[in-house]
Image 1: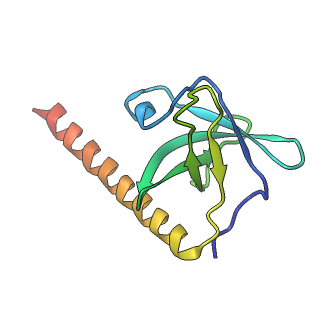
Image 2: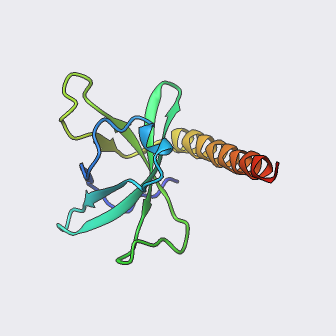
Length: 128
């Protein structure tokens, strides 16, 4: 069963517009603030946005007060932007279906594998 940390989440823009996958090419870590039901905020690093079966999903890593995540926990959410209004805040939605969640989890595993492969290639090229 898919577990979610909060029952209602809103994403607030924090120095990013029309994220797409543009942030992956940027060395600077992109973050968002999630506003929780109780009014507190959690800063999350944006890991990536995945496309799975025609739907977009965002992968977020919650950060502590020092900007760290020691346990490697990540959160998956459905993600959408309004193509007619790039200034509108993106929307996040929970993934309530276990099969859908597993597909996103598998896509994220493939993403991690490709990142590890890219790091190996970059290291080999640096040795040349």
